[in-house]
Image (cartoon, rainbow, N blue to C red; front, top):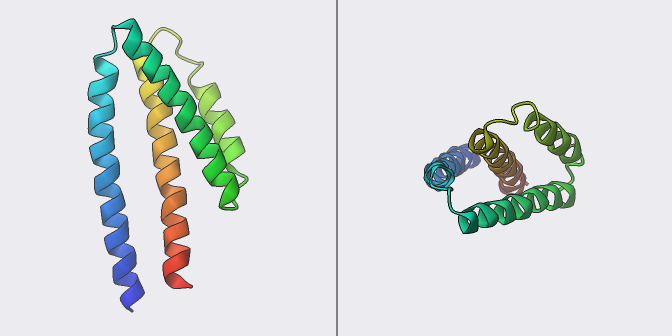
Length: 111
């Protein structure tokens, strides 16, 4: 029964962390008119994409490749809104990465 409480607490911590990260990401994407900021955002997206793929593959979730392709295609539908596409892509990668890490933590707590 104790592992259920650990699961609930770890999930709550993950949700709070993700919401805090999204708060800063929204502010960062809205203030991105400078070319240096845009370059840093592109580098961040690339690092996040690779982190997502590597984490998913190393933890035994080969399905991340399909999710990665679907997210990349999803950003191509609305070409006129760069901030919206970046937020969509970054937000989904962070959410999926958090879900993978939560599963890994849950497996470690249960076993």
